[in-house]
Structures are given as C-alpha cells and as structure tokens.
Image 1: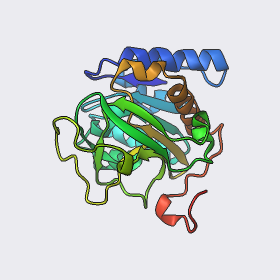
Image 2: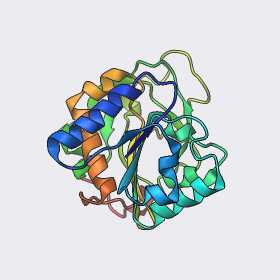
Image 3: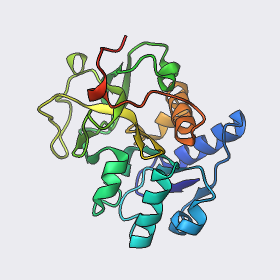
Length: 240
C-alpha cells in the first residue's frame, strides 16, 4: 500500500519505482493511492505495510485514523517512509515516536555529502558493497524524538568529509552532537519501521543502489527480511 501526498516533485517517480520493484521482484504487490480512507481500521488490516511517500501535512487528521494506525504498527504492521514524512501530522506526537524523528531543516536541494555506512553488515546496506559514497540531495537535519537510543542507523552523513556549510540554511541545520542520520530502522511493538530521508529529487529513484536500499527496507517492514534493529545506544561493541 502506498499513500503519497505533498508538494515534492519526486512523488510520481517514487510511486512508479516502488510499484515496479514489487512487480519485477515478486517481493510484494503495491497499491498506489491518494485516499486517506485506506488508512481506516477496516481497510488498513488488509495490508502488511504502508509506504508514506514524501507526505506533508495532516494525513492522520482524525482520532480514528490515529488509533487505527498506531494499533496497526504495534500489532505487527510495517511502515516505510521517505523524506518529508518527518513533517507529516506534526500535531500528533505519537507518530513522531513511531517514525523515530521530526523536523526537516536543510540547506540546498542538491547538497553534496559523503555518506557512511553505520552498519555495513546490515542486509539493508548490501547494495553499497561495504563502501561509503558521495550523494547529492536535500539532506535533512532532525529534531526530537530522534535519538540513537531509539533507532538503528543505517546511513549517516560523514561530517569529517562533508562541507556542512553549503548553501543557505532553512531552519536549524547544526546539531551539537554532529549526528546527521540519513536512514534507519526501528521496532515499534511488533511492528517494523524503515525511514530514509533521501527522495526530494526525482533522480534519487533512478539510482540502483538507493532503489536496492529501499527494496530491502520494504522487505524489512513487511517482515520478510530479518535485520538487527537494536537501537545504536544499546550496542555494546563497535560494529565492524
């Protein structure tokens, strides 16, 4: 299931990519929709996971939709989310907790960063072959409830190699801890969450590496791909 709304130009490209990946790999069947009624309890139960595609604004605008979605995740449903979903239903704190972060401060839409693999052994990072890489997109800086005590970070900005003062800041773009995650997974009750901030520009969904990262994230959210989702702060020894 996919629900896509908002003003970002990448939305049609992401919808196409998600649907085609499912059909080509046989990993899942996607329903593309722009109707919030599919998030109602009676309909939501027919799906294994929800992909919120770059959504902005009050998607969960009624108590009934909020209760249904929270129950869906906690009882084993999956959530896949990209880019602007961190500013979806900002008047609902519980959604920020489910997702793992809020906020969308950023610099230019083609900010060039070096991306490091925080967990090179995760099957969700297999597409990158254990190697860091350069990438350009609208890179978000997140706010609470983001914390490595709550999420398992997969990719993040390599601050030591990146010019963090490119372009004009839109919002508070500097974190005191210098921690700028790009994608992560987490568990919420019995449910599974995958978030990736990449996806402002259409070209993101023509990059084979990123598509494979999303495919693995979708499979994790569906429960078909096992991966360590232990929050980073709980990891006792450094990852190799």
